Amino acid sequence: MATRAPADYPGCPETVCAAEAAGIPLISPRWGIPDALITIGLSVVLAVLAGVVALTLDLPLGIAVIAGIVTPWIGLLGWPLLATRLRGNGPRIDLGLRLTWSDVGLGAAVGLLGLVLAGVIALLTQGVVGDFNSAAGEIAVELQDEGTLAMFAFAVAAMVGAPIVEEITFRGMVFNSLRKRGLSAVWTIAVTALVFAAFHLEPVRFFILLPIGVLYGWLRWKTGALGAPIIAHMVNNGPAAVVLLLGLPEVTP
Image 1 (cartoon, rainbow, N blue to C red):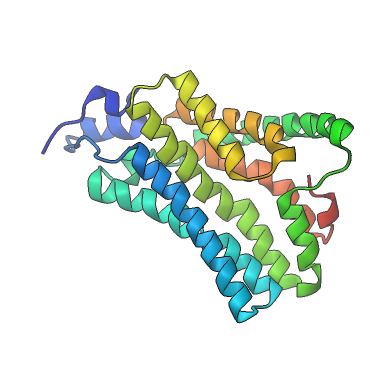
Image 2: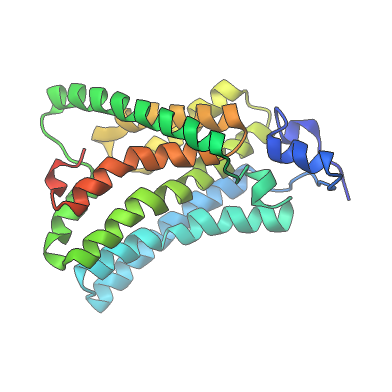
């Protein structure tokens, strides 16, 4: 079994160092940028497929929305886990999929900073383009007549599911694919943030999502793992999820 090349894991994340210290043999991962592109592309294809099926079967709005959110996760979550398992050392080592109490504290602090930053940029954006809502807020407005269960499922998906899945994709697969190719930490954080912001397909909120993506990327680089950015992402999405549960989606930022 091949040993890892130092460039495969810049900065020797804790998961890699721990594996080496324990004498666990590591291989040089054979996944990379093509897998990152497949991850994102597969999610788009699945989203379109879910929309077509929902329209064809004339599914209730609540079911159609939840299916439209969760189905793309098969690509966003499934491909990184599969690729790192079959052609690497698994997601824990290759993607830094771990969580410690220090990750929780740092992630929560940066998540709160992100909320403040996003709020300031949202106010500036509102001054330029007028009142606007997020895609999640617009969907939630439509879900109001679908019952509490649909709204609850949507809020949980936004606060818990989306942060986990998106961080595995962007700060996991995309981030490490770029680092494996030798891109510097600064450029990796910047490119990952750009891809993250563009992926949401919300032009008005692009410059809100961009700095948030930079913060998540910095956390990924600083801790060498995904736990802190996942927590920060959950903290950022938390207030909006609470607003949805309170039945006030029209004020979702």
